[in-house]
Amino acid sequence: MIQRLLTWEFQVCSGLVPDSRHFVSRARDEAASWREVYKSPISTPDLASRMGGYLQAYTLYSSVRPFGITGIIGGFDSQLPVPVDGEVGSGPKTGSGGKVEGKSYGGPGLYMIEPSGQYWGYYGAATGKGRQAAKGEMEKLNLSEGALSLRDGVMEAAKIIYVAHEENKDKDFELEMTWISNHDGPTKGLHVEVPKELLAEAEAAAKKHMDGPDSDDEEEKKKDDSADKMEE
Image (cartoon, rainbow, N blue to C red; front, side, top):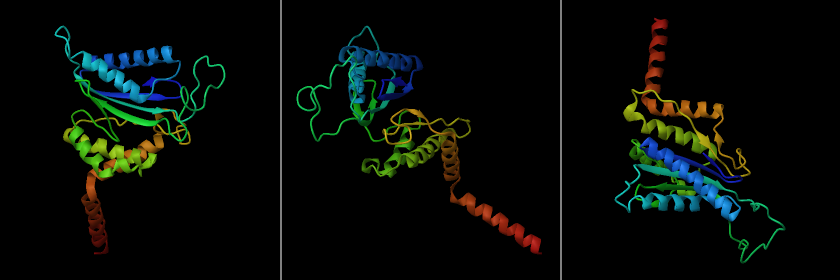
């Protein structure tokens, strides 16, 4: 996780672990460099652009190899006025050096960066072994409509993770989830862990979804059979 003061980033990578660590370290350096020059946090699109250019540079020369990772960068840019480090006065409100009246700023952003350096913005993205199953589940949610609440997003994300893990269901795994909301939401614009109670509820719902309706019918049938035996 990269803290940028009033705006937050998180990164997920699949592929070679050493490359992933270097990717995250470089992203931190880019964020620090941006703040040193512009005296304010780097935005999510700008960080994705810089990291895409960095990965693309490693495809240009024979002395280096391309990165063996696919990275996902997510962040929430502050929708509130962000002060400039060492700022004196408020500065212009609109026009050159200020914000354009009537235009919205900040908000969530999600970008996937390929080893070639190409990157795209997404409403939902997945990478790794179970990405195809996860993508299929995300397409059912119509994320572009923006009708999914934050709590429902946690519930659906847990289901998607369990569906993607179905191929390796013999291997145990521990579900960990984090979330981020706007300044009016439950996280107040911060990237934090999902509350344990909600995480447990989401995991229970995901397990029930994986069991399917047939398992519930079988349980009801067993109850009916046992009741009939008791009557006899």
